[in-house]
Length: 304
Image 1 (cartoon, rainbow, N blue to C red):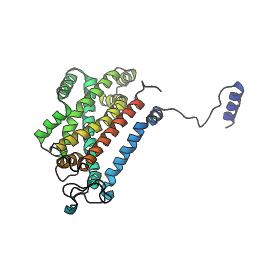
Image 2 (image 1 turned 90 degrees about the vertical axis):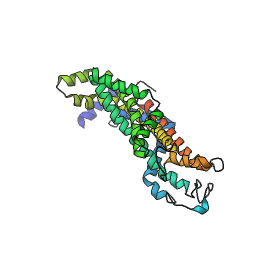
Image 3 (image 1 turned 135 degrees about the vertical axis):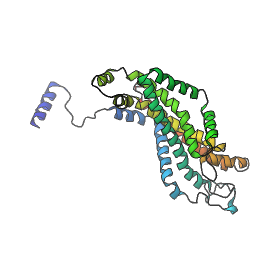
Image 4 (image 1 turned 60 degrees about the horizontal axis):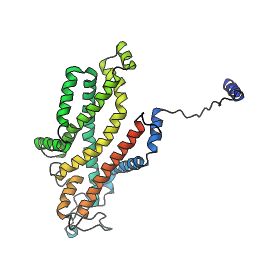
């Protein structure tokens, strides 16, 4: 302590700033958090997504009615204090069904994008690092998948595998994979000839260690942004497949299926399509806004 006090005294006498033990050290993470906090829309979107996650875990407890609790005396009633979002064609409470459908829609979206991100990341690392015939095969497969619009490709896969939520997850994961593969491949090509990667090679590090310890962390920011923004599109695609009758099947309270069930009555009872559609719209919008905020926060080329 005496040495530190003497250093502070000499620093003060020389006119230099004193050593402050509580000086904040700026790290890449703290800088990213600071930039993200400045994106007000993204912060609001994150809060809404956390609220959805809360509903996914506790929706069954919070729902005032059972998911398939029929009340034929309350068929197609409008919003009221008894039924906040009204009732459907079987007298079931729409608020409760949308609440419980949150878990299904989020699980399908997150599951599909997670599978696609893992497969695409591995393929992108292998293609970018090894090049040659491996890279050519992977990229030609990706080009083939890119030739089809995402929803058309998903419909084709579900038509082959059959309807159901698990097959929807597979279909969405398949058309999500090429995007991550291209993204990670480009980052791998940029990093594989850097000094620290060459040093790891010279020290005898295995290819597995180089790929997953030295190259992959450098691609994390781009992967996180793409992952976040892909969740919204995957939820939208899954809902579209359920709307077409190729995804969730009755009486599952999936949002796309709720929207499909209500379209027959939308001219006379608009609430049957308004509230499921609003749930899909707000969720997809929130994930897109969150992705924009993360991109601005994690991109080192963007400055204040």
